[in-house]
Length: 375
Image 1 (cartoon, one colour):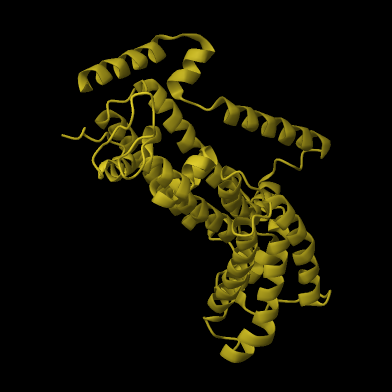
Image 2 (cartoon, one colour):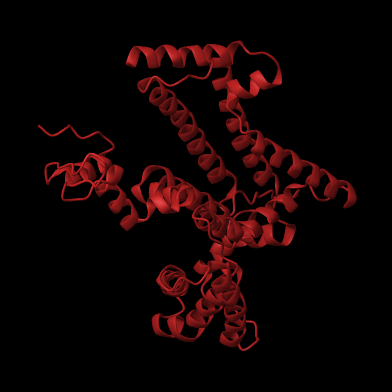
């Protein structure tokens, strides 16, 4: 069996390597054509905006600002993936973000900071805990209505969109709430919420190491289970694209320099002598962007490496089969057999089996094996 599988895998690898043209290249490199199409569309949009804006769109300054502004949307998108995979939708995610942010701001300025003090290092931690608790309670409430009361997710989240949007205005009373903790402000980016050029290159080096080791581990895993291997040139090509993307992104964020007044303020705060030509201090990666990357890595691990992630994809692929009661019923009643081992009446009369046959079938169905016939 293993030899046949190995031969088949090698044959597929040989066919992928030997196929010519664009299709053969895509098959060998295993690049998703849908992702390639989305990247191509994004590039067309960027180039169009760059031309229409007079050459100001594809600049380090604008790309850095876009990365900071989309970081919060990216964090929400990682959770929305699980919602969409389970064949649901959440229209209220933006309103929940708004009301949670307002609750965090009010809690920090009116309760947490007066309680702990302006110079306390626990203000930002307590503020984050308040936000996580609010998001958990709101999500739990809507999830309970959807899962246990049977109300469609579209209806529940559409109502939540309106309710939580109004709640955000009610919590803030329609006014702007300035934050008081400097550590918490770092989470939003800005001139102080970045790590600089040196630490950006350190992050890039760590990312490169993880990408290389990940590619090697994936290749060993394929070889272990006798799966088709990529040709070495295809492996080198995809690995090179990933490394170039990391290095290019790091060069772009390091190309965005602090403006003159901010550079002088930074020099004064850190006792740095300002040369005649001025300081060139890079922003580097923004803190919210790094948080978004970290959340994306964690969510990828959860969906691909944990039992919870497999349950999510099982629910999205076949909700009926993933339903616990239905699965248990079908496992205990294979081919019309009852749990007590008796079959229904047919032309041949009653067929009797051992009482434990149903339990054996259920156990083996959960393990994915076949039960042995009764003796």
